[in-house]
Length: 275
Length: 318
Ligand SMILES: Cc1ncc(C[n+]2csc(CCOP(=O)(O)OP(=O)(O)O)c2C)c(N)n1
Image 1 (cartoon, rainbow over the protein chains, first blue to last red):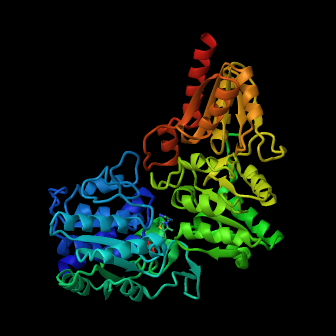
Image 2 (cartoon, each protein chain N blue to C red; image 1 turned 120 degrees about the vertical axis):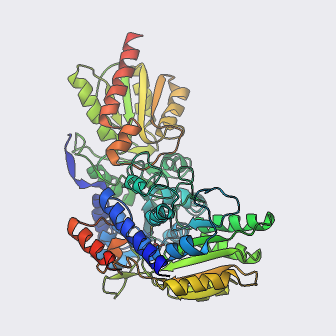
Image 3 (cartoon, helix red, strand yellow; image 1 turned 60 degrees about the vertical axis):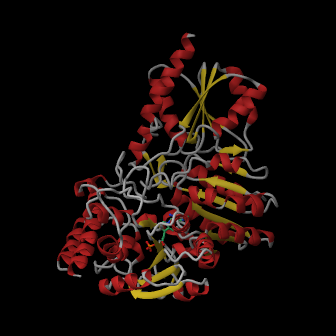
């Protein structure tokens, strides 16, 4: 467990460092997803970093593709490619494009970046497993803002119709998007959509709700639902905080995509060191 | 020229749209969760009742705009060029263009320079897609001032329009800042012999610089700027084809089916002439800083200076 907590902190530090060094990239979304990524890649998923194309591997789709840097740091820490390569993030001719590009980097199961599309390819992967009698599972990380795309619900319907019990969608429910709606929230904006669980339930999915920063709860929930005997596709509503781990970024939409100043960088890193 | 304009196209867009909503209460801005990037947020700040956040749902947003327009409202729908064109195309065709509704579509961050977000966010298809539609007017201003003029013309025009905007500071105002923008009209920025350059959008300031560089070398080529891509200024194209041995079209868009394709349709029909079409070649792009990307695709002023000179020398010696 401590290991998973350390990995999550490592992911957050890698994100902040890379964005600071490259002066590019999204911050808030990767930080809210760090604990989820840690649990998936260091515990739940059956994968072989040394053989990224292994046909039996569990699949992962970062439907909220703008959080790519979070996934890259995770893959580097897990041994898919040298950690030093993170320094090329978003640079010309890099394998680490701003949004995941499966034609460039081994270990990426799908290209994403236009919101709403990743979940559909996840449905396709889960259908392929069934048609080929394979045991692998497909995990999709979806944004709550992203869930405004109609395509998400088109995918949800088909997954239920074909009883894709091997499909797990994790909603990173951080109540913020890029700009969103005016609100009385302290930072003035939000994503007014608190009822994710009820929606997925209404679409016939097996739904769990969990604190997306509670590593042991995340682990337990994912273990539990993936062993559920029913054929229903699984939705995990992970209640998260955008910018989690860095006090001045938490819950502030301005850190959706922003580069820390020198001072902010020092401050953020010192907070993350404490974990 | 040569210095960066004090105002980016997107800021001028946000300011102008705010004014348009204040001048005419039928005007309403629809955002696809990008208002802080596209500057649609200016409208929300200054005139909140004229702003509707549609969330990350471009298809629905375009459909809602069609409904608003059918009831006499003047909706301005804005997202990144990539998403508004590709994501919502059937909605644009069936709900907006076929009924010829008064919807203003704005593709912000068009072309190559999208703040280092890579190929998913680059839009090299939107000119092709939008000009294909029979009722659509397609505007592609070359500087911030022209963006404002184009918006004022759009507001007066009754029918579907696509406005193609760039994100960043363009080079400072094109010469002739007193020029009157009119839908369907091109402007001559330089006159020369043998070769005429036809450019559109934010490519025009870069081409203008390249043409200036060549002038300093004693090479004079003609330069025409097309802030309207549809309806195309066919007269100006035919005249340029008659007066020159070679036309060069330049755009921040796939060369296969863009502005250059539209121009060659006119020349092949009315006045066949040798042409070179410069733009994004038939391959996907990637991340990079703006100057790196312009160089990578041969679209920086320096790269263009070389390319134009080479063509000019070939044409002049044959
Ligand atoms: C189709 C599409 N529309 C718009 C965007 C621009 N965009 C990138 S991230 C983002 C907000 C995403 O919010 P959310 O899904 O909640 O992600 P998170 O808050 O976790 O970062 C937007 C609008 C996009 N990438 N794709």
